[in-house]
Length: 131
Image 1 (cartoon, one colour):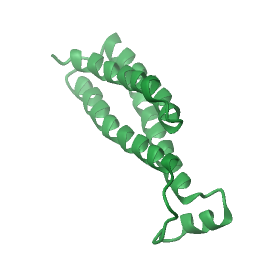
Image 2 (tube, rainbow, N blue to C red; image 1 turned 120 degrees about the vertical axis):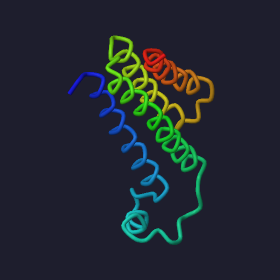
Image 3 (tube, helix red, strand yellow; image 1 turned 60 degrees about the vertical axis):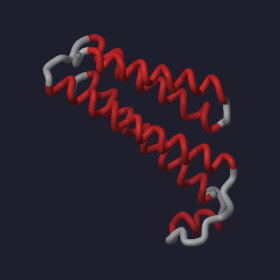
Image 4 (spheres, one colour; image 1 turned 30 degrees about the vertical axis):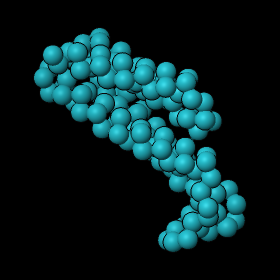
């Protein structure tokens, strides 16, 4: 596996962790009632907190970004255009998204946008090899 594809794998793992975090946070799985709810059908969730919403939105945003990142990275591979920019772009994407998650969860408005932008620059670097 090439190094850039490893960053795709790390990003998929990060997306999964963000989804699980959002789910467990919403269920309040650290409580006995929340754990029971998490293992059940989740028909009657407890009222959502602001943190629940932030965790859910961050996870959904990660899935949206991951789709574009994976498409760009795989297109670069299919075109045989993998170079140092692709690896650097993949690294920027991952580290930007890793920083984005806790910043969004904590409700930090401007710094989280900077982290998001770092990930977007990473995708742009990968896309630039395809132009």
